[in-house]
Length: 363
Image (tube, rainbow, N blue to C red):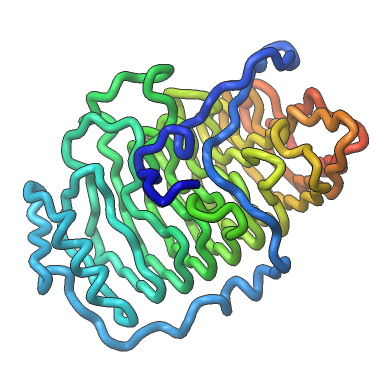
């Protein structure tokens, strides 16, 4: 890709384009491929290795206010906040108050450590932006963000609703990064996804890896609570994804590779809760088969879904056409409560990854 591309606004990168002509089972719909450049796999890592990926916690704390961040709920603090991030590398940047920024968003740096004080938020000002990232974690290593609340101000966005504007607009965008830890993030009212994970937009060879997210709460996003497009060693512990609606798939979690260059290895989703989403968890692999053989490993223990409008857990879209995609997708001990359907699989090549859903509870 040319270095002149504006990766923050290019709709080919951040916008979902819906597939056509795929016949799915009754009650389902054509799902979409997410935009973004993806790369080749690197060595797999365990969940324990994820915890060791980040450097030790810095001891020096600096306040964002010392860089001119007003956090008064009115002032556009984006430039001051970016300056604070740039000048606090290797320290803990403490964000307090109600920070408002425009939809240009901010970029975290290698060795950034950002902590939100109790009640602190970053919220977008009124905007007309279908594609944005509030916090970009792109092509960097060793990043930690604690207790963030990021608000996409969906109700203040005057962009034309889907289909014209697609499903861009993410709180956290992680691309080509490694050693990233998000502790108890809250992402609300995003035009697209709460957390979006893919490979580098600048080099298709750089794979996002060693990503650990604990206690993610996504609420009121239009497209997904979280999307995993590609990566190795991605763990979510005890997330809550709820009230996702506005543009398809409208899943609590969407695991959906973009192309044959994408990678889905060592994906662990531990004890997730999904509530009032179209799909609780959606796995759609239509775009993964290609000239490079792929091995998929996705494990989802103890998923609880409440009131999915379609399926609590839906796996679909894989037609190999002579290509090779192997591996496994497991859901152990899921509970489906008043969901339209619990587990469903459709359009799935039997030569593809084994799909095992065991010990289902339905209420």
